[in-house]
Image (cartoon, rainbow, N blue to C red):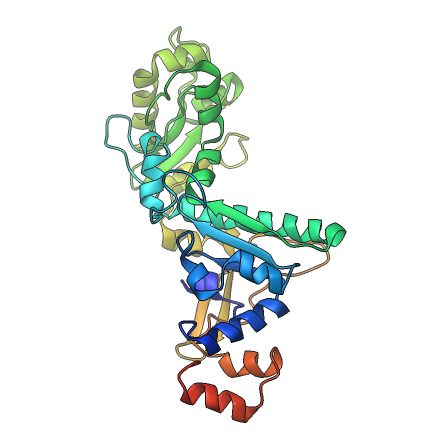
Length: 339
């Protein structure tokens, strides 16, 4: 993935021989953090497990990212985003109300696990300032997906009951609050409370809905969900999405066009926030990449280098980090230890 590999350096190294292992050991002694995503126990045979590397570098932060973690009955299962979405509840609550369960459009559990792992690494680095010691981080897709169920999991724990199923773009307890068809595409609107519902009615030029006894309160609107949703969509289908965006502008009511991905990466707000950056790639020329999403007041994270080619920085790392000379690097390459 080009986006996740920007700002990285690539070393081609075979660690299925003693020389390659020794190089990795030396790199581990020079590093603050090691991240791996092999099945539990797989790296022990290469002497690259935490127990081995912690002896070489007690301050090393060693993060293991797996499907189901280092312990538990499923520890030896390979982890795939879509399987964990299914196993740990997300797929059951995603999709249209009367449709089958579906996965999220991106590998959201993979992404969340990476984020939680990064947070764990930062916490471990902070702890190391006090103790001088690193530690082993056990991050798994399954644990993260359970944590990602948020209020839905909390409700099940508190009530002892199952979830309320799939709601598509709608909200289980707030109406109207979903995506609707327009004349040309789709738009999401939210009459999240009685005041905002009133604004929606006015903007749709249907003020009589505010006093309709079926729709006076959110509880009543939930009870008559089908009726109000049908009425709202019928009105929204009379104009294009762009026309409605102009009508809703400045109203204070939540609304948004349902954009496709091309529309998103070309969105005026996305561009104004510098979320797309163009960089020069050694193989394909200029490429546009998604930028870092967090803004800082005294720093500017940016794409310093494009995604590397495989082994592009092998010589650089061996020379600058481990002190190999040209002859030593050439010998390693001839022996096919590095590439």
